[in-house]
Amino acid sequence: MKFRPLHDRVVIRRAEGDIKSKGGIIIPDNAKEKPQEGEVIAVGPGARDENGVLVALDVKAGDFILFGKWSGTEVKIDGEDLLIMKEADIMGVIEKSETGVIDKSETGVTDKTVAAKKAA
Image (cartoon, rainbow, N blue to C red; front, top):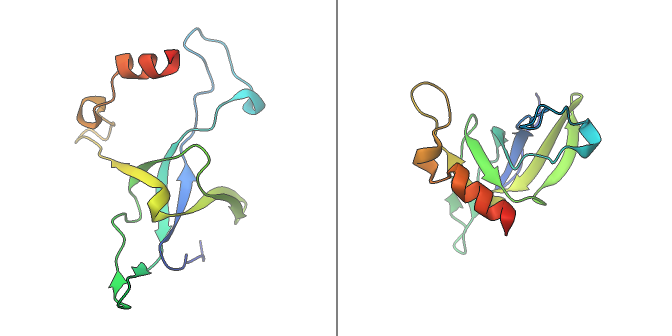
């Protein structure tokens, strides 16, 4: 990709959502909820503070992140659907375990907390 974001903007590839429900029902694309996590593809150089000093970003290319449901601007670059958002719209970085699988115990997210949020 030949795209370089400016200032504190980040380019994100949205994670793929589940195509089957827990009951085994296949969910069509237009009914799927868009995932709120993704992989950072490119980052800008950073923002400037009040004194004009460049403040580097906390995320880097390759990080997996969580972001708000309505965050960012959807764009199509080289035929790929991507998001561009400011670093402030990113809620956090998801740390992967040594096996390459996201460990929910490290993030504090459990099936019970997810179920409680859905019930609320």
